[in-house]
Structures are given as C-alpha cells and as structure tokens.
Image: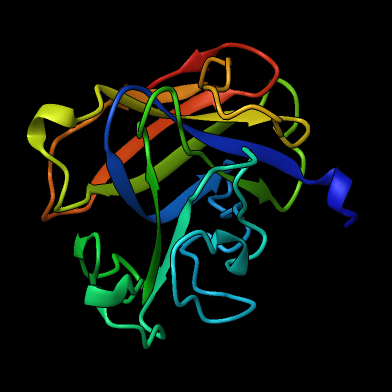
Length: 202
C-alpha cells in the first residue's frame, strides 16, 4: 500500500504535562489492530537522546520545533546525561507496558509551545463503519500535579497533519477522555467512533 493511502491520526492533548505512551489498539469489528508499529518496538536506530521519535517509524512529530521523544531499553546514554532508556531515564522511571519502549511528549512548555505524536493506520477507514480505539498513557514522574492536563484524545484524518507553526493544532478529537494523574500505572483510554459520521465514546 502506498504511503498516501494510509489513514493518519494525531494524539491531541490540552493544557499541561508530559505523557509516556505505551501502546495502541485501533480495530475494526474483526479486532485487527490497524495501527502501524503500535507499541513503538520497531525502530530504524536506537535512540540516545530526546527528539528522536522518527526512529520509531512511521511515528513522527507534526510541528517544526516539536521535541516528541522516543524511549527504548536499547539506549546506553545514562539518565543523568539525558538518556532515554527504559525503565529509567531523565524524565522519570517507568517500565514499558509491552515490550521495551514507549513515546513521550510535553503538552505545554514555555509560552504556547505544544507537542504532538502522529502515526498511521495500515488501511483507510470505511465510511459509516464503527471502530474502537484503545491507548495507554502514564504521567512522567517529574511533572508537578499542579501542571496536569485535563483531557487527552485522538484525532483521525485522511491525510497527515503538518504545521509550520508551534501553536496548537485546531481540530476536535473523535475520541477523548478526562485524564488521570497517575505516574505509576498505565492508564487506559478507550472509545469508539463511526468513520465519516458521528462518534460514540465508550
């Protein structure tokens, strides 16, 4: 299948905090996972520092100065030197939910800076079909509870979302939920929506 035939989705977030993302399930009625590289296990090279999410192909960051990160147990850089190892890294301590890797990003930095995580599906979604979505996140240890996001969600589109600005992307996620402040466990977000139509949150 050609790259342009993939169906894109972008992880959205509002307000503040840095999340670790563990794994994704996006499925049709037959429970086939449509997400390419859903738990970030496949990589082009081992990450040794921040801003290397593109190593976990085909995941990428849509903003020009975004610093979405890729954490993997293969990293040999010490946490004290900015390493992105799993489970211990410069952002905190968290085992991968599955495998040996996860992604991380900052919802709010200085000013209006925001980070996003964008990926693709194996096949386009069929209009008027209902799809289920499931993903897991964990709040990074170093984040103060007073700077925690209120909601988190996923937005699906027929093409990639790229921007020349570092301001927030103005779209409404088809699947979203209130975020839970938990630095220890992986928190599941699940929902469903009808492609090309309305959404129906579980």
